[in-house]
Length: 289
Ligand SMILES: Nc1ncnc2c1ncn2[C@@H]1O[C@H](COP(=O)(O)OP(=O)(O)OP(=O)(O)O)[C@@H](O)[C@H]1O
Ligand SMILES: O=C(CO)[C@H](O)[C@H](O)COP(=O)(O)O
Image (cartoon, rainbow, N blue to C red; front, side, top):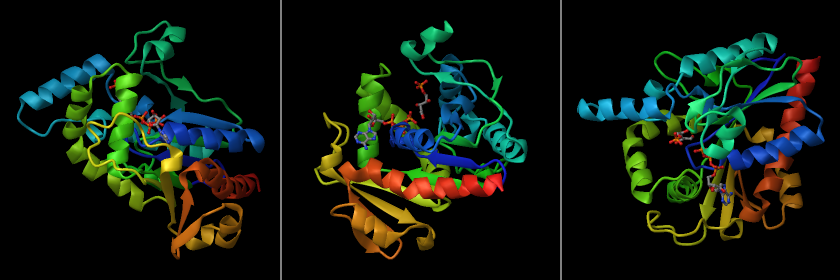
């Protein structure tokens, strides 16, 4: 935790929708004129795509537990922890990008599946904003969560998460449904041990729940739309939210528990902005005094 240089993190599994939720945060930063350094979680993968393929094949051959992008073997948790700590101390640190496809890679004149060089983050920012798989991660050798001032989980129910993952990886990243299914299976151990525990460390979780049948995510053709879903929003500390005001402003919302409000899916972006803008402004105001 840092009072002076705050770190805000959105964490969620692959396909959960963290990149999509990032847009709502960017609206807040733009509207409130906050200078945020954006850090993408995939930048902290340990291997580029070719090296990862090899490392996965080696781990599968050795008959041990296969490694995955969810776990510590394939990520630089220590470097991520060090970045959050250094940023918290003095507002500096280094990051890079993982270029997923040709569209992202061509401006860098690099191949898809490679990293850009490590580069110092710009000075004079108001906050660091992390979006990715491991904003609240902990392993035997690293504690990323410890340095985060506001940790937000994005976690659809798992069938929906898999539909979103399969849809995105087949449509935008060139994988077959079979290849994505294999990846989901290979990652399961790390999913249980390194992804889901984060959602007990978060301050707030946004969980999208569909109201249409998603019982076989491996044959689903479409992602349920926002109008075909609700979002369950749970606060670790209920005092973080002004529930009467949220219930008043978000049409058709209701409380399902004393620390949980449910909003129609179409209101997800609005709910994120209404809930998080005051919390972010408060953190930044404290950092300035
Ligand atoms: N609320 C939503 N409603 C409808 N579609 C969504 C929603 N959130 C995400 N999606 C879709 O799900 C897919 C995955 O979303 P996104 O890329 O944001 O996931 P991610 O968590 O950033 O994944 P990764 O970490 O693997 O990049 C995308 O096709 C996106 O358009
Ligand atoms: O987990 C992921 C994103 O959070 C991706 O699967 C990971 O970044 C690897 O990408 P690719 O398979 O395109 O090299």
